[in-house]
Length: 99
Image 1: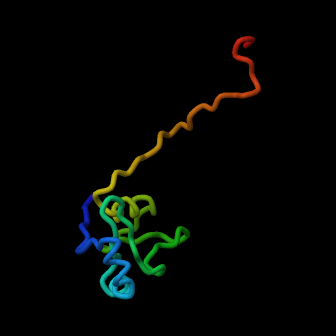
Image 2: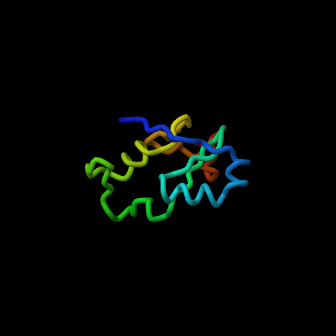
């Protein structure tokens, strides 16, 4: 998997002050990244793949949506992947003392 680094990460303050430029650049140059601690992406809705259609990478390779999302997610964030098994919830209707 190739990590793609954004050209520029806007501070929240700069993005607010230059919102029209952020929107214009997202359309002409690709996704714009905003934030320091948490990073957010501004991208035209047309650039977001439809879940019903196959996703095609820049080199023309068809791939599952999940793989595309992982390869195109902002870097520098800690992605937490949940366990496969959901946690067992306690049953409030049973009396543990009486089994």
